[in-house]
Amino acid sequence: MGLTLGTHNNHHHHHHHSESNLSSSTSRVVKSFGFKCPVCSKFILPDEIECHIVMCLTKPRLSYNEDVLSDQKGECVICLEDLNAGDVIARLPCLCIYHKGCIDSWFEVNRSCPEHPSD
Image 1 (cartoon, helix red, strand yellow):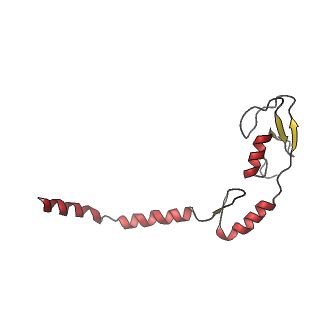
Image 2 (cartoon, helix red, strand yellow; image 1 turned 90 degrees about the horizontal axis):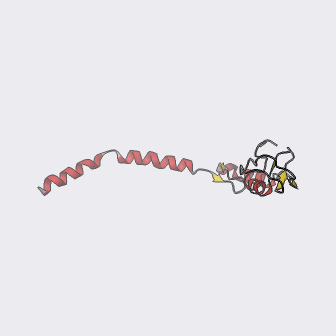
Image 3 (tube, one colour; image 1 turned 90 degrees about the vertical axis):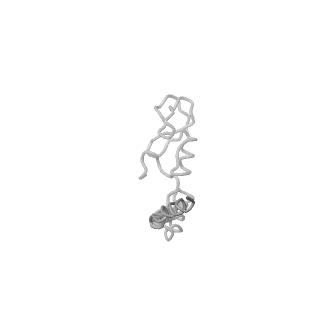
């Protein structure tokens, strides 16, 4: 009885496991290929990362005018909360306005207007 059990088990192990393992591990390598830019968090190819980081670091942030709202102005596109009278806001050159705290943390990731990325 013990014999039949033993041969039965061995029988299942000859499926093509090695092939499927290979393909899944190669796709994993491709995904992590490249470096995350510490400035803009995009994935960059290894041979471009140095040039990219220099560009990112030297790219000027948009400057904005800090202001306190005197009346309600719709919603802040970044946090989707209302811009209320008395809120400290940032007015960008494209005249978009946001909560100052929102645009400050936005600028840590992106250096352009959330609505006008080309500026």
